[in-house]
Figure 1 (cartoon, rainbow, N blue to C red):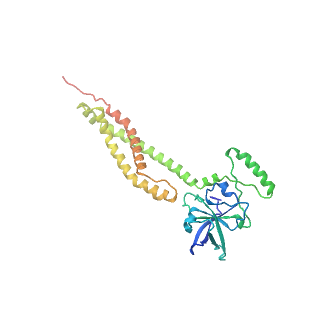
Figure 2: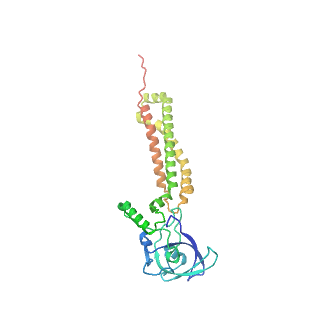
Figure 3: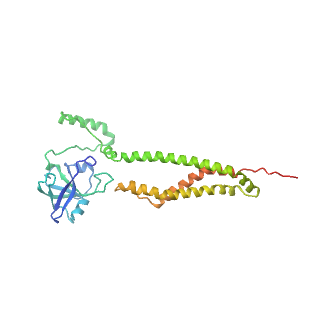
Length: 301
């Protein structure tokens, strides 16, 4: 089952090349491919009406690795390595399916050889069923009843495949929540500090603001005077944060995923604009308050 184990590497050799290649292998039953939604590109799937014990289905990557231009009907040989017997079994390629992720998104799609479970004695480890979302409870109870009828001495256990797949990424979900929490706290503390700094700066420059307003400075002039310094601080902080953030995302985290987003310059510029906007709004209140200050002018006769 994808994401549930039972997919392992084995050694194969095609009739067109003497090179022995290691490829992942899975055994499936009749109609498993249709149930799971595998997309057939050429040939046929396994069928209950035929003996498929010596037939295989390849994914696109396996066809490219073997270098098969017309894979249907070609022979590939399995070379047993687990028990070091060197036993050879020749299979015929009957179908080609579209590549799919049979492992997690941390790993690239690799060549896959799919054998029929008719070749093994136990035939199956899992029974797979596709259910309509609206009929889950009813269908499960019916399946359980049938299971108890067929295998009364074996416990009925089931799992939903989407839950299994989701479990592969719970670490990322936990990391996302932790980073969101600490990022939020960091931004909150930074904004409190910025607010306090703007308040302190405005109080220190209250006399200067009064003098400037006496000599004709307008509200906009004083406002720009107070916000100019904070703009420089935010810009310097942003320039320092770019390489650190890029390294953590690109080198430390995203590189562990074969399928991932790309960090574009627009993403970085968008974050910079948002940071500037939040900082500007934070100091805006104190700047407007200070620029609206009306100095008391003493006059003499």
